[in-house]
Amino acid sequence: MKNNYKLGAVLAVLGIAAGILCLYFIADTYNTVIHTHFAAGEWEESNTVRFVYAVLGWLGTAAGALSAAVLWGFLKKQDWAWFWGAVAATILLLAGFFPMIPAADSGLPVPTMWVFLLAAVMWFGMLFVGGVNGKIITLTFIAGLAYVLTFIDGVAPISKFQSTFQMPAAFAQNPNTFWNGMYVILQQVSWWGAAAWAMFIFAVFRKKSWALPMGIFAAAMSMIAGYPLGLHNALVEVHRFSMFLPAPLMSTGLLIYLLLPSTRKMLEEWNAAA
Image 1 (cartoon, rainbow, N blue to C red):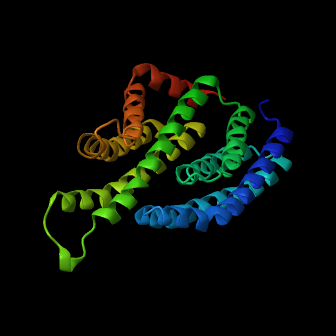
Image 2: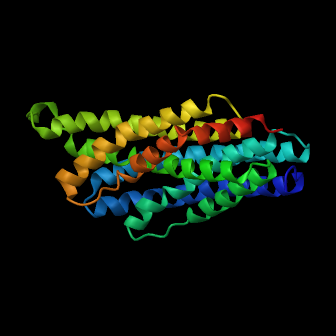
Image 3: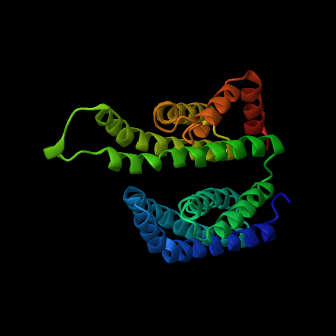
């Protein structure tokens, strides 16, 4: 399937459709999810949805527009088309997956599942068109899981920051004041870590020599943010396994794998391949 421009064009059309559906579904469910959480007394969750849904709507719609450029590239038999198709699919995977969580949590339908499924077909398809070998697909797929999980670790702190914030007139030093500061800082550390995982994936696809250090950076960012949040949540708040922990645990495993000599050799061989 390598260099199958017709298949690539079909996949690009799926990306355009996914971008349009992302825009429609997020706009359609935006206020419903917000007000359902608010009615359940989860005012901080409703505020978080208000912000995060908008961000993902912007990203998903932009990825759909990027897919239009990718379609042109395939129709003109451009070598770069598969890579930018993979970039668009990577963004659409996130934009389709995360909105399912607050919607399902409220007992509402999860229409963005279709965006996610279309993006998954597009992602794997673009890699086949680009001639990416199986080991690289496996590595970048697992890194993609870390990318999504690390992004999710950056969402919950938005809610927790709101619920632990004190107005100046009512300020009293307590353990929440420390964690309030941690939430506002680690929220962005997680999102930058997610972006770094995406950059690692793209760098591997483009056979860049800096892919390996980028992966180390991404893993470190995910671990620095995820372990403090996860351990505090597990040991102090919920007294069970924390959903903050999958991202840093997966990133730890990836970090160990990236540091192996065999991994470096595999990436060097991939970079040297025609």
